[in-house]
Image 1 (spheres, rainbow, N blue to C red):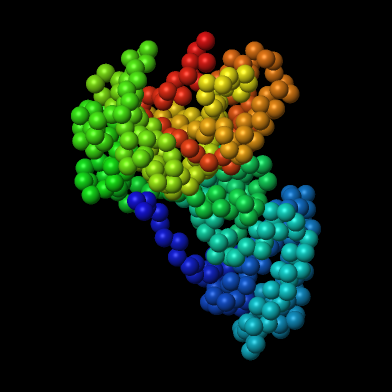
Image 2: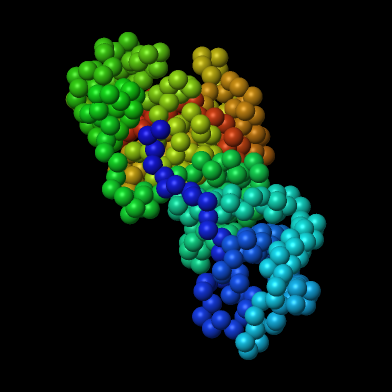
Length: 419
């Protein structure tokens, strides 16, 4: 796999506070810092506690804190652990195992009141719980006060989850459901984090041992001369000329359909029909280092682009019988992305795409006129971007374009916005 991401080693468990304790005045806190088994039990309890806190909301914080204080008092009494601040206190024999047992019982008791994604979050293995938090941080969704993956899903983590959910196209609950876990796990490392950790990976464009598609989908392959490209692809199978003086050359590379878009005498972009055998990582082109594009849904791509792509369709009504309509996402690259535009599409042929197409159309029909829908104005003003992304978030990517220009589909969609 030609992707880079930091290894997620098994965490060394620490309690939900800074270790070591500066004053050593609480023998229990000192023990939690020193004993990873006790620390893991503490984190498992914190996981459930913060799920409970997230579910109940800010209005219940005072009552939830009172529960925590009462639990701490009862635990110390049961396990004969001296109160914090007791001079010369030592941890009694058997107190560590007692602490783990009582903590596990309390976590199970608090979990009974949880439901939906909060219950799923509380039941999640603590290693995965921490790893998901680290994914959000690495991908650029975290901001102060969440500075590290510590297993505590406080306000900073909840905000990061909601920001990711908005970018992915899900409801902003602030809790990660089991279905969402599969998509957070696809997040990569933001360009800023990746480059701070190690230099950018060398381009594969000159690596003659690399597969042709991997050599072609590199940043330094934009702006090249077509003869250089055709050393890898062979001659074009089809050639199409467009009114804007763009010429599209379609190549077959081991049954993979690649289209190169030439303007002037330079190749400015590449399109690819995506199949399990015809896929590439988008690592060189987008902010996050994501898996190969065949593994991604529209929601995954949107999240990798930090929610900056706009949902589009070449038509949502009266499309005619000439071709299947397409739904997808378009992002205009900024300076940080080297001004490289990203487009991803899916033809409306399978169940997921048909449902997305229908749901977005129905959302528009509740508010808009025939003219608005037929003329593709929904592609231009962003009024229904949230509904569009929500509708298509689980649709698999079937076609991509990357480059300093636009694909033939993108050209038709953008032309609607210029009318």
